[in-house]
Amino acid sequence: PTHHPLRMSNGTNGSADNAGLVGQLDGVLNATADDDLASCCCSYSDWGDWSMCSCSPGSSAFQTRERPVTWYKDNLKTECEMLGQDSRFCGACKSPSDCIWSSWGPWTDCTPECGNSIRSRLRSEYQMELFGGMPCLGSGTQTEECATSNMCDLAPIVVAYMSAALVLLCCTCAYLRWLRRRRSKVVPRIRMEEDEVEQEFSKADMQLMRENLPGYWTNKHNSAEGKFHELVYVDSNQHKKFDELLQATYQARATQDRPCPRGVCPKTHLGCVCVQPGGSPGLPTAYRVRRVIRVENARKWCQYTRAREVIRASRQGDCTAFSPQLLGASALSQQPHLFDSLDANVNEAYAWHGTSVRSALSIAQEGFRIDLAGSGAGTMYGRAAYTAESCTKADEYATSEVSGCYEGVYAMILCRVCMGKYYYTTQRDAMAKQQFATGNFDSTFGDREQSAGTFRELVVYDTEQIYPEYILLYRRIHRDDTQLAIQDAFRHPFHMELPVYWRNCHRNPFEESFVDQYIVRQATLQLLQKVVLRSLVGPAKYVVKARRLENSSSWCRYVRFKSRLRDQLAGAPACAGADVATHSLLRSNTFLEQAVSVDQMEQELNE
Image (cartoon, rainbow, N blue to C red; front, side):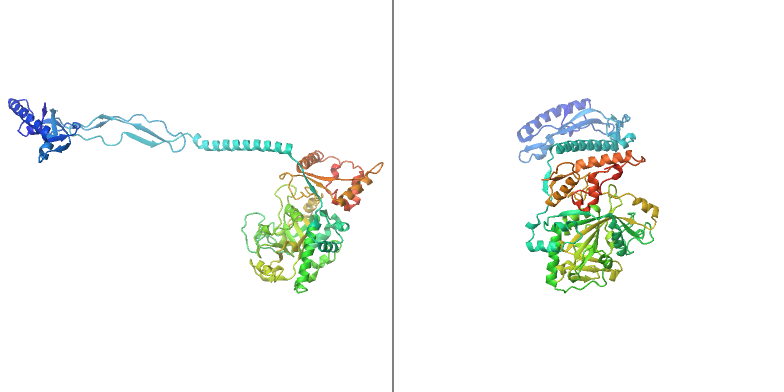
């Protein structure tokens, strides 16, 4: 039976005795009246759910429910709210019963399999709380970290290596495919060997250039043509003269610009302990020449002579001389067949510039580049072309290749420098170039020997004021080098990687690809004609046209073949030499080196 609270207020307790029956009958009459009131004066929404059974010990248990009042008439709010409540009997009251958890279930597998892994297990409510008992406390889920297999530690490494191998394989395939296409489609560039100097300079400049050509230059007899651009080997018999010049300009001191040969010491004032005289390996005690190359470039020489003439005209003798005179000045003056006379009125001098072999050859081809100044060790006097009177200072910037043809070989350029009226300073002065920009000075003479006990440097800001005349390839000699080791290092002649008369001689043919053909100039054609006539049997033949082929791929194949042959002949008796007409001719006529050089030939291979 359903009981209304209004009926309960009459004192009934819901028992089944006779008094209760009377109360229930009375309640039915009251319920009828209540329903009439609710229907006329109140509006409700739907009934809510029944509540849990609740009771006090020793009494009956009841459940209740409610329905919200949505409208009531006049002052009947309280009556309508009371009519919106309902209750029912749900049995006798019992003692409270607490909630009980079931046992934990099994653990799940560790996830993910690698990394920070976890596992979990579950439990459920075995018995709900009853009659006001305590609910279940805690969670039905439990998690914890768990260990994984050691293979997980190797998984990222294996994946990384496999990925790298796949990328390398793809890149290799792409490169080989590109290489095949390149070789199948390569078209040689055809160029003129001669420089069109006349189109760049006036007749007066050309005449000045011809009049000032050094008499010992190979192209002195081609001065009328004025289109030469060549690197020429200096006879090995003259190497001793250059060794003497290196000795005359040597100074046993170092600066912070000399790098640590071991690569462990930081930049240190006056150099680290590894480069000090007496250190290990210590400061080089001498420099020995392996090869000397003379630069004969009509364009660069014309630019230099023109700039020198401009300074001579503008200064008119207003140039302070070097004091004391530069190192090696007396040694230079004693070798007129190697070094041209200098104009003291414009402070013309020979000075050293240290670099690598390939950079030296590139400078010989293209000239100095001011935009690259400071790439070696900074700029003390602004961006410029730096030279030094001491070969020891220049050697601080010289480098050799770690491996390859020029391993252990360094390079210095002996430059002609026209200093004119120089700005003299004994301190670091990064703004020294502004003195040149004003037009008051033509160069900077940095005398750090006076203030720091190091070196004197000759600095020019116009590349036309410097001409790279000689390239010296040399080896460093240290205190601990034995005489036997030095003799062994110089036992075999030093060969350049590429012929120096090639325009691409400064490139690495194993890393830089080039395929060029040069239409030789008339002077070279005449030299080739001499070779033809001297080696010809029968009617005379005349050379009409010729091209020089510079092909990196073909050259590398040829070099590899010679290397294999050299290894095969190692330890075998020397090959019997043959009398070849062209070889004898080239040996006896050094001027032919402009076109064909035998200094690259290896006689032990009968090349």
